[in-house]
Image (cartoon, rainbow, N blue to C red; front, side, top):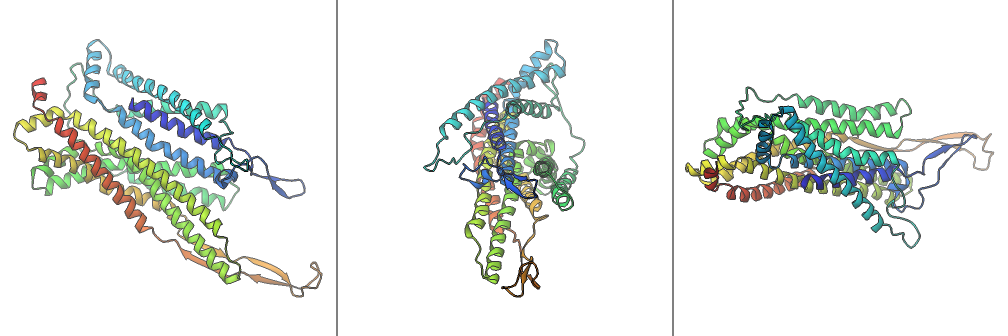
Amino acid sequence: MLTAISAALATTAMLAAATVAAIRGGEPVDQPDGSNWLAPGAEHYTSPLLREPGLRLGVIFGLLLLTLPVLALAGQCIRLGAPARDRRLAAIRLAGATPGQAVLIAVAETIAASILGSAAGFGLYLAVRQALHAPGPDGRLRLPTDMFPTPMSLAVAVVAVPVLSGLIGLLLMRGVAVTPLGVVRRQRRHGPRPWPGLAIAVGIVLFNVPVWLSERMVLSSYVFGALMLLGTVLVMIGVVVGTGWISYTAGRLLHRFGRGPVTLLAGRRMMADPWNGSRTLGALLGAAVIGGAAMGYHALFVSQGRAEDQFGVLIGMPADPEHAAFYVNSARLVLVAVGVGVAVSAAGMLVALAESVVARRRTNAALTAAGTPGRALAGTLLWQTLAPLVPALGLAVVSGLVLVRSIYHEVTVGGGTTETCTDPAADLETCARTVVTDPVVTLPVPVPWEQLALLTGGTILAMTVVAGIGMLVLRSSTDLEEIRAA
């Protein structure tokens, strides 16, 4: 059910992006005489985000990014109920299935749930579209409820989620050893390597490539956006996969310098399964990368508005406050979307914690029977949650911020030149001309320390609350009846 709900949300977001992509109008059209005019078709929308083609691309980009934490939540839901699934797969192996066939059966279950979720998401999209179709008094629309995705984009949006969910499930289960008896002993020979940092560096470089190319050639807006999206995805992958190395390193430090059973047990568990942090924190870290980038753009737009105000004072023409406020408010909308992504990620974290506790319920019950205090097990769970979270979250937010600041670390307004006649009464074509150079205003883009602290601190607080709820699940899973059931 959780997988289907995640698929429905992801499908709805993709269909919304496809709807915005179906809008036509506002593009400059070259005329035979060398002039150009804007193609009609988008004037009936109230928001410039929908009227202007360049801004529509940003809306599509943001909606597609919003699907990433939802898909990560679907991947975490796949792992829920792992012990029961392992018993079912073990029975299938006893019936004669190969390990590959058993894994494909589990993946097929995920795809089936995702197909139902995609169908529900399509129905939700149609219902929301109909409910929000309300023209204003002037006949203009706030949302593109009069547009419908093209057949190709509609098929891609509905089919992509089950395919991606199946691939995520196959990826997460690639290391599952399915034996006829459902018992396997794993021993880790060495820890993860920090090579994902290379993916972060490549993603930042790729994010800068379209800006560098646009200065030397005419680049399509869709190519521009695709390269930036690919760079952002690479950074997300590097941060999420790199959490395995962070978790293993934090576990080694806890095991080496810890002095109590809580830190020693947490350190050994983190070293034994360092990829647990990547699985449980994946959606959250993806949203944090987007949040860092959105804060970078927010600081950029605020600095741009200040530079335009100062330039207007110098030339005696005050700047339009609505123009600067529009871009700032657009960045704030992205931050709201990031908040939604963090909320979805918190739900995924809760699912992952519940799965982790349920998977270890017999071990926890055995530790309780051996005399381990319940507060020690709760403290272990808290250390396992926060020890990899704090450095990984800092890396995610900083990486997202560096994406933007690698291109825009300062803003410049002015510096243009205009030619005017020395004699205002003379003929414009034959008069003596004077070249006037506008003043230049250059301002650095500040680092949004307050917003970064708010995002990081708020996320850590939310994850602490989630860990507290996980402790309630842990308390109910340490019943000694688990030992008798074993």
